[in-house]
Length: 395
Ligand SMILES: Cc1ncc(COP(=O)(O)O)c(C=O)c1O
Image (cartoon, rainbow, N blue to C red; front, side):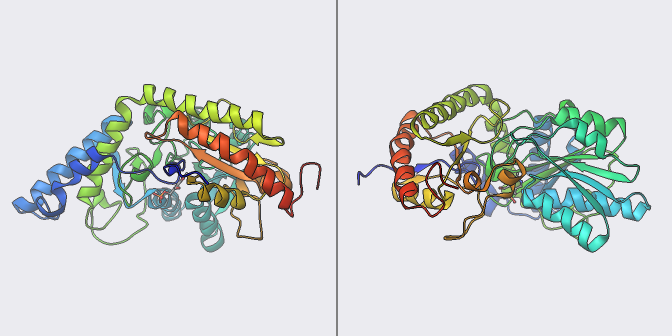
């Protein structure tokens, strides 16, 4: 086996922290360490940094700083959005119906299911087409007079499909129903202008765009009522108690600003890498298909279904060659199961178990694509020969 440098193609899972972000965070560990809620100068220093970061994030999202709530991660932001709206509706004696989709991240879907199973809410999980796309007409058709929330992810983490958020937002607005979008996967690459997107709530997570892990944002449009999902002090205007992670928030704001500065050029570069990989693999591997939308997809996402092989076996084979990718499949060794996203898109079993996702980032170059093109086709061939799932033409 040739030795080559390790290649990271899993930026949808997480990204390395940009050194400029590390630098911006540095003073907030042991120089400016006050509690931002304290009244003395140590606290006021921290509070100034916090409010500066809030203003920066608000500028990127085109909203008012008081509409920004900092959280501990994307998962918490989604939980706060769904539970906060649902409980506020319950408190006000309003409806009990939530609309979401069949392909949400578990941060949304499991929260919706818990609201259904433990709190008596009704949830509609909208279907998607074979590209993983939600039809806005389905949103319209699912509306009831009891609907209190619509939650549709901006871009899917597995297959990269970008949803028609602004259009769904228009429908939500026509009916005055709060609209949340999980924008965690979109944070580094897509437009986050909450006015143009017609959203009332939007979740982000810093570690997906070269910021630190363990810090997130929930944008909450003025006038939207939330019951906090955590109870405690009055931090974050009562939306999210807990001593504020000033260093992390400074990191998040810096990372967001940096990803926005050369976004168009970087997206174009990522698209070139993505398309080179897609074209190369479609040419070299029989019975492979691109999953997700052919054009409405994240610029850095190339995801595939490969017939008759186990995605996890592919992942481990690639890892042995120093290439880090991801499978969309929630399988355990020896018991492959298609991911719920691929199932919702209607992929048959023998395709769905071979889900494989490559997501590019700042450090990737063409030679990384070439390494995958060299390694993956013979690996697929070997696995198909050995695979219990069956070679092409099998069941
Ligand atoms: C679409 C989506 N939503 C939410 C999350 C959760 O974010 P975090 O890891 O910050 O909790 C992820 C993380 O993978 C994601 O991809």
